[in-house]
Length: 164
Length: 164
Image (cartoon, rainbow over all chains, first blue to last red; front, top):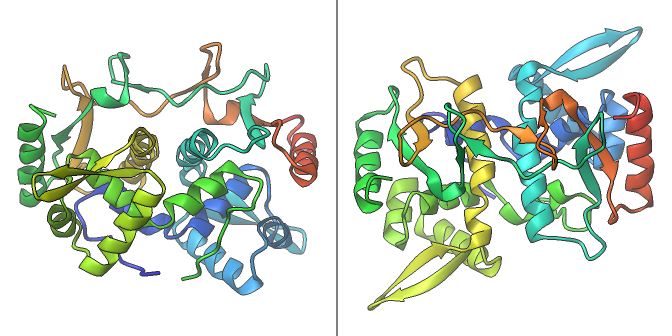
């Protein structure tokens, strides 16, 4: 499997992918969201080797997705705000997995409103004025950080889609 | 970089990760969402080798994320409904990338309401009754497809979080 550095590309998706780096990182963050904070627990729940886990934790610390906290003689790993916000990515993966790769018996895990236990609805999109949007309602504009190539690309897309 | 098969794990996130497979697949789906449908265009926009791109397209066809359509003598690749729904994952990656790895000049691409050009708001969570939820309001329950291990795990998490 190839590993490519996306860092210099003019695309926030590619930069997010570069940082999250590989799927182990996403699963480690999922574990941390579920309350895992000790090395041994990560290893046990994810069935990872110690050396892979060490490398991934180091990277997640460097990117300030996790932070270390001393707990007596042991060290705990906790999510930072940046790490906690990966939850939106994780929820979208879970919902897509549930919908398109369902298990015969139903989903193994259900996300719920912690207070009322009512299940989570599919992720919803809306614009900054609160108008709900379906996937097909979402278009692209060039942002202030678009380089010439991106700007040209978005123009092409808009022409092709009748102003996407 | 290790490649692990997550297929047999009792987790929809892991199954989604197994299928999306690697980040090239996500970027190919992003391209397709933006209207790319020809082999040469995918190659040019993503800067991929022909052989890597061929393998990834084959996999995405097998998983029915893309489908082929003949267009005269050439073949186009189009997203299926399953492929289009990966957009939720892509939007969540883009928003996280914009927020935590901002470019000095601002985001290169802005997602907008296609009709009004009003920018997209951050993804929102709500339960099936329409109650808006912050990340911290989301808890876990065992679903009908939970195996013994998952069930036990969720009990532990709920105990640790005071009923997560």
